[in-house]
Length: 232
Image (cartoon, rainbow, N blue to C red; front, side, top):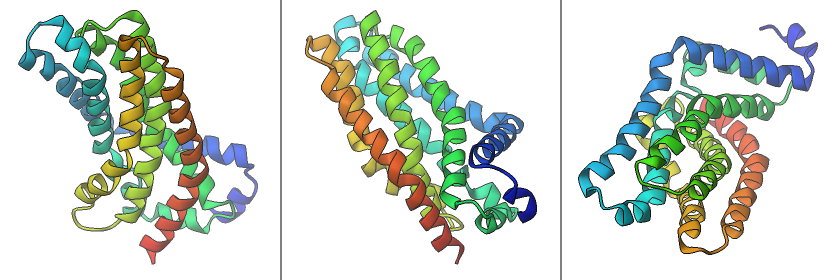
């Protein structure tokens, strides 16, 4: 994609072009997408098998189990967010584009969430049924994951950019990102637990929304800066 062509593309057009490109590449690498989803299903399903069929216990642990499984599953694909573009030289061309690199990064983060985060949100209610979660708890689980999983992708993008090109970068990404994702885990699981305890879920969801806005504001710019540092 040459610079003259990129100059003619509007901001919205660039976002759409990058999202379509990354989604098309993800379709061609379906095994990577399925790995994340299957890992999420397996981790969440092992706990009922190990703990037993006592419904009170399952309902108690359900929020934490599903959220931890979603967090760990989202870590699997972070190392691939920029690696393919780095290896084939596409990332260098993106940095030379007249548009802001942070805009391109935002499109790539969104495409990553559609591929790795959105399937977790869709499958989570089905997994919640095996924990005997109520209908209200399932709706809160869906909404909390819709707010929380994009944060995981945005925070993960920063870690993936910082470890780009490093040997063992996949493990380093997890070490960098997991501590930063703990607040998302706490508020996401806390929102679902609040349903069982009869307390208000609005405070947990409001904090997740605030974290989402903060990540949306800062992560594209920080990720773009980290990419430039890694490419030097």
